[in-house]
Image (cartoon, helix red, strand yellow):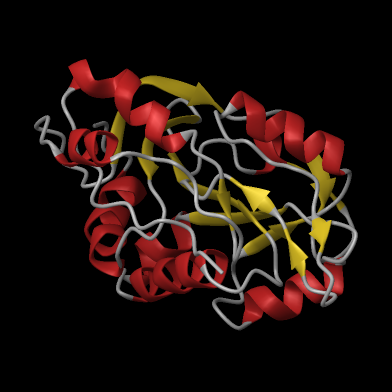
Amino acid sequence: MNRTPRQGRSRRPAAAAALALTAALALGACGGPSSGSTAQEVTASRESNGSPYLGTALSRPFTKPDLVLDDTSGKPFPLRERTAGKPVLLFFGYTSCPDVCPTTMGDIAVAMKKLPPAQRDRVEVVFVSTDPQRDTPRTLRTWLDSFDTRFVGLTGDLGKVKAAARTLGILVEDPVVNKDGSVTSSHGAQVLAFLPSDDKAHVLYLSQSSVDVFAHDLPLLAKGVTP
């Protein structure tokens, strides 16, 4: 079974913005078929544009979606309202994902632990389930606690999740139950970083960005540094 393709560090000039976003839009199935990003796309994402971030600095920032789902306590969580004015990392995935989801969340968790407490408390990490039928609030909380008890988990109407993801250039498909009973949820595997100054995503991390990339960028995000 093919795994989500590895994509390298994501630094690129403003002129390559459209190409980098094409790579970001590639659909990654956790434990499913690989997406078709090309060597040209990956190379473009590695080129430096002078940004202090190692992640891809977006020339056209994404507006934070007006999404309301249930958090892990079962209460409504209006994403835009509850995270307003905060540095936010946003990722779409599911708890039974065998590869890219736990790897990504684990890397972020390790990088978060490297932050001074004051900066760590400022950054909000939000995980939105792409398999809400199986990712109940309790299941989601248990899974997230294995990484960091402060991580926010959201689950609920898949239609809302797909619509919100689409506004960020992230494709989410309906989960598929395989013959062996396992579930494959195909979804974009990128992480988006929203700045506190305007609540827009200015930085994007392609799938399997390393701990070092997140550890380098999180202090900048916590301080609200603009790319």
